[in-house]
Image (cartoon, rainbow, N blue to C red):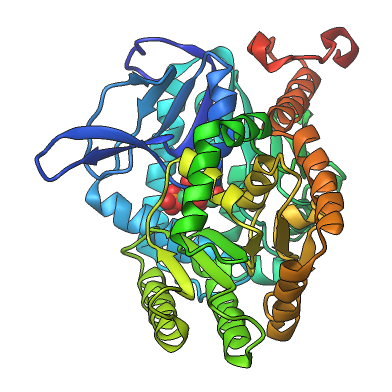
Length: 499
Ligand code: F6P
């Protein structure tokens, strides 16, 4: 245990780079908290609400020295990052080395030893923060590529705790992963966990292959046999757990009369076109926004669609704005949107309605209801929860999902119109097919998609992950007893059987 005494110890702890809230300070110095961006928070928030645990993470601003606090029923334990940590650990190693490397090197990754040193140091800080607030035998669930060294560091500090790790983004094939100068340390860091979860079967396979290439450990799917002191073996589980959303909550939101009214308003303000196509993404080069704009621009130029009939609404929420690749992307996207609008918009009809903002969930639900087609053209995406949110909101069984085959979601959402975003002609054909799809086919497809999203929701995802974690912990030879997990998570493992 670390020396400083914690205010309180928790049996269940989530550790992620970001807390679910970011601290916002306005021009007059007033403080408020806003939901932080990205799929991780969307997925984990409902899990944390149902568990009386603590969330360890960064509050989204440099040099904030905050005491633990409660926000909207969730206990937050802030980890401080200095301006240099933000530059080297977050913008540097996490988002300019690992992010492009793990997404098929769509942008070239940069390798800097100074960034790696910061990554090691900050990972240690997160591990210590979790170690300080963990009750004896607690369950600690670490998330995402920013914190891959935490499982091993935490195990060294607190061998009594049960450690899960979930990777929200893809895990790359060995041919790509092997570029990383610190590849072995990353694998060893992850193997500190009892269970390592991935989005897709392919990600778990890539990880096991990396383990075989870089360590002497045997792998017997889904186990990796890690020798420990005294001749014993730890069986680390590495397998897919595709993440999801709180589908019922999204549907409930979409059913609210004022949300439906807002959806009507949105269509009206767009000039009531026959078809509204929607794109919703963080402004990230992995999302294929340029490919989407190219396809839409060509359809307008070909005369296959007209601005009177079809509007593309693109929500591009600001992201990682100080990383160079993101600055270039913003310039390129906005230049292209400007050109297409300049070439094709009329006084009464805009070709592309472009929004560089994030929106609250209610507004998103209204946008989903207002759109006939959702266009997901990611070049590589761990899951893509936007696709699942769209489906969850369409209780009217209408709307067409056009979905890139390079998303984790495409493994599950089989009745979407699947596209290869690099194939611009194929993408154009899919957009036209979506626009002209008969109502009956839209309903049949949407029904099947909704069944999948309802059944495999975020509660099921967390339950399956945590059950696997519990079973793995029970298998630990002679280890200390494992803490009870929150009842609300509907724990169903029969401990006696696991023994
Ligand atoms: O899901 C991937 C992810 O990188 C999360 O880890 C992260 O919180 C989210 O996207 C948004 O990115 P960022 O925290 O860098 O703004």
